[in-house]
Length: 314
Image (cartoon, rainbow, N blue to C red):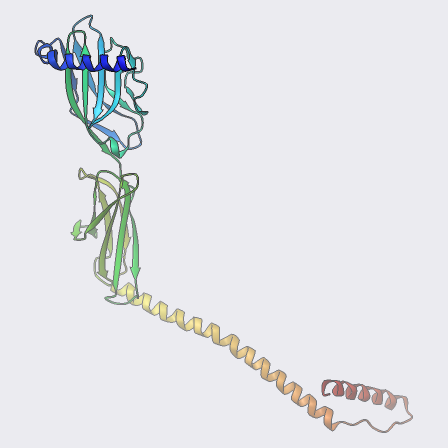
């Protein structure tokens, strides 16, 4: 392991000493695409190709971002200690291949930035840099309306939100169909995954002539990723809403009072019934016994009622 590392270091020193001369003689040239685009969550490629003398073999390839080595080819094999998620873009890459492009399996925000590619062949070496610009499309914005009351000139706040985009974008407000802009600050916050969440608040008064408000989300390049609209009532509609609310409040009050009146009437009726019944029981006395059958039946009924009264009035 130590011998291999020492050999690698010696080889690099040789490259730095003689690599410039070979590059000037055009024995090897690394050509990279200066600006590469990557979509968040998708595979990305930083493109680089080499021009080398016929019959030459690639001895070393080193891809770096900042001070971190992402991919290294040495001694006819890819270093197994290279981080996962990075490989040559050409599936069947070998020491004869001229395409040394770097493939990033799943692009994230940390992949945004500058990369360097160093290549050494039998004839010499060269080193070039390239950049990867990571982008993520913002989600369709949503608008939430907040108001403490409803009435002419009542304040209402429109809150627009959108998230999941990169790099940092902005939100814009537009009135009606004329495209007139409204000034409102955009607040951008970085999420845990590095993407941005945008929010903007616009405070208005109900009853204005312009009733449609549109919020657009713009990406870092100025393009529109999405939009949402909300329609606020004008002064005539606000008046109608107030009348409807008053009618609703009156209806609710009547719905509450009516059952209470019915219940109260029932309670009063029951009290009167028991009072009258008590009076009837106290005044009514059983008649003397008689011999006829009809009068005996009436007497039994009266005794029965008297017994019930006594039970209900102990």
